[in-house]
Image (cartoon, rainbow, N blue to C red; front, side):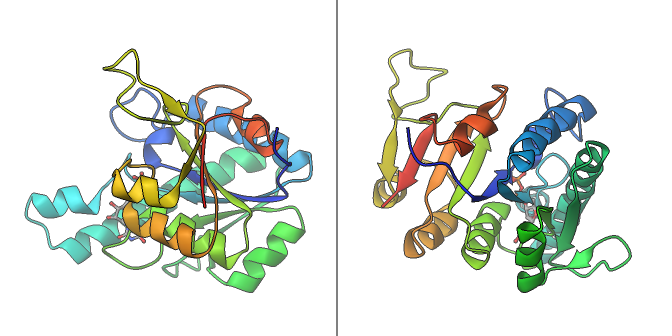
Length: 237
Ligand code: UDP
């Protein structure tokens, strides 16, 4: 059992909000995630969230189909804002105070990203949801998660996925696949283990930010992860 965390950055992919739907947002799933986040916030943990947009729009896919890549990426970033507002609504319905900060200014719907302000919100117990990725095309929300975690001095990135950690081969195809309890950054990069994209891993490595990969669909896992129970795979030095 590790030590409990005080300030975490939770990376939610857009697909995490999609559930079994092929596209968009499943409100039941969003409520479940919000309930888990509310539980840890109410226990005094500071939570920042970076949310993806793959359930709505992926720049790289649209650019493969002929769209200008930067334009497609801007659309992808705007998609993440829809997810951010959805999460905000679900959390506020559970009486958790939140702020959405976007890396592309949208002052009518959210605050702009201001690092010191984000930290202040966290200190006051508000959940800060970062939307619009890094604000730059050609990046991902995984890289944004690494960047924001470094900026706000988060102790760890929780990378919520559909599997309970990182395996040496695909557990859906190979019944003997073994889960790593811990992994180092270099191993992840050289073996191309797809924990997060390589830019994100490199940023975490440089700034010594551990990444905990775990299964979000198991209820209570965010709490377990926060309290230092050994679940998933911990990527570190
Ligand atoms: N995106 C971007 N810059 C960023 C973050 C995201 O251009 O800093 C765009 C990119 O087009 C990406 C889309 O937003 O495909 C959605 O983000 P991502 O694919 O990371 O979402 P996830 O896979 O986590 O759902």
